[in-house]
Image (tube, rainbow, N blue to C red; front, side, top):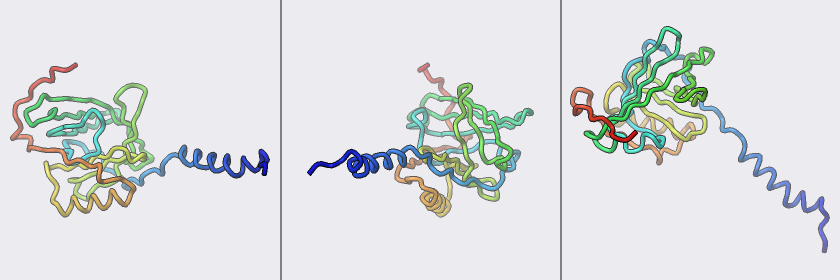
Amino acid sequence: MKTSSFEFLVGVGLPILIVSLIGCQSPQPITTVASVDLERFMGNWYVVASIPTVFEKNAFNALENYRLDTDGTVATTFTFNKEAFDGPVKTYRSRGFVRAESGNAVWGMQFIWPFKAEYRIIFLDPDYTQTVIGRSKRDYVWVMARTPTIPPADFDRILDFLTSVGYDTQRLQKVPQQPLGQRPPPRPDPSP
């Protein structure tokens, strides 16, 4: 029995088209915190755990520092020791462009002009001592604190939160940390 072109399209082509369109849809944005007091958010944050980018794999002592500039942008310095506590220090600088209509919770993080990466503050405790930075793609995430570690109960709560917003927490990696005063003197990174 022969099938017509129309029957083929409906039986085979339409399902392929639907699956293709579903695959092309953007993920739902992650809800951010309602508002962020930028002055309180500035300063040092230890990266306690992350789903790391390629640049920060095998990071030790990862530290993110934010400084609010007079033009309203945020100067960001990310440093870590490569592969060991006494490994060479890597430093990356970027600039955060805060979207005021987001309650200061959504930034465009610019490493190379003119590109801006999505940066969403999706969790922030009332004391500004623990935060989570996420992305709508759920590809990267950073769990950060003002101290090198987070109490286990708080960390478990953050894991539950990340699962609830669609992250695969099996990909989350803890970052080995030392307090700033106990870190070895920095060694320059010999790689370019």
